[in-house]
Image: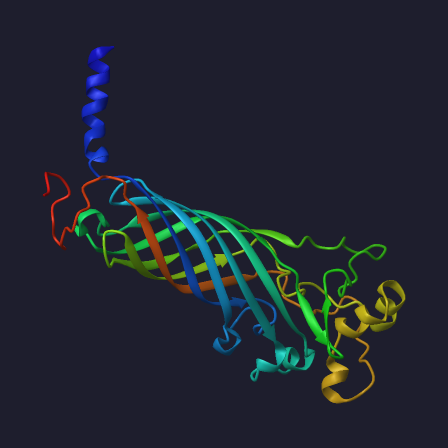
Length: 288
């Protein structure tokens, strides 16, 4: 048994010398999305970029790997008015915005190795991959008010013979790339871009088929009927009646969202050897 303990201790030495440490920080940047209201998932419109912010804590396991737990708040939006190359989508005249609240757990791989301790490896690009859960509530502006679309059932959700209302919580797979730089032993500065394919097609409240205006009016009310088909608002006519079952969205593609931002974080290095080491200093040894 003693021999086994010695062998394990020897094997662990390279990792112990990497100075594991906790890190906490913030992200400030922007968010965007690709879905049915971005030209049926075929375009990303930069002018729809909205504010995003986040908080995270990270356990740096060694120079190469870290595990991060984070919360992001972001807003995304889209509108058919952006589309110029597809009359069907443009004339649909739908729009939305939603606030995203994301909790995620991701792993990071520092490609070059990253070690702020003693500023020995102060720079590295990195890749990340993980899992997240996102709360969302799509809304549309109508007659001066922001209306909650999920509760209305704009595709007939809740009516006899049709789907139940969709959930406003979805799982996502955050992945992306970033770069980080240690300004000091304690302070890191970074830039990160991440994509999130989700397991829902309803971030924007659009996915399936139309329910005709008279049926939707009778089943889910005037507001659902008005926001289920908004072509009449564009043309200045009475509500347009489209046959039930006519394509409204593209249910074959799930929605994506993206978060990009600058990160600033603080390293909790409790080693008693910080002193006033300069860039390029050693990570071990005695300092006066």
